[in-house]
Length: 171
Image 1: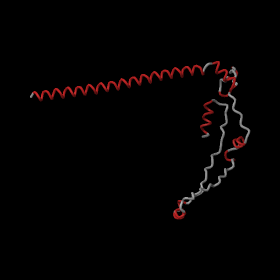
Image 2 (image 1 turned 180 degrees about the vertical axis):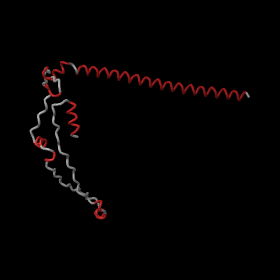
Image 3 (image 1 turned 45 degrees about the vertical axis):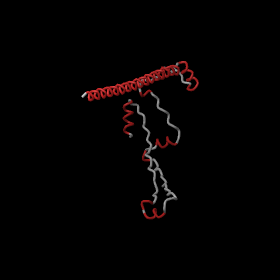
Image 4 (image 1 turned 60 degrees about the horizontal axis):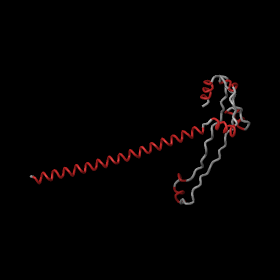
């Protein structure tokens, strides 16, 4: 009976020692992960501070004004440039090219677009016997679909809603 008690207590000590070791090891791993996460957070915060400093430098009004003078040559906005109504905004000038002639013609008067057939070549490595035996394997000419005619929307003297409705009707 005493030998059974000694074996029991020895097993209990071994199991508790092993459990203590595993718990200690798990806590150390969690502590290491916490340290890595804290270092990562500190690095991210430092990067955010650097990016904020760069943003502040890049958005300095003096620097932006110098870049404007160097590359864009934009001027101050005058009060007469601000428009109150959609009718006051000038339309873009029409391009002076063949597109104007096509856009000015009614869609029915546009000449049809001729599409040339395109032949598909068969690679030389393909056996001639397979091509001769199946009619589906013979290449057929491919034709491209004709593009729909181009229609430009006409600006009306109405409101923006009327212009949007006119554009929607054209689609």
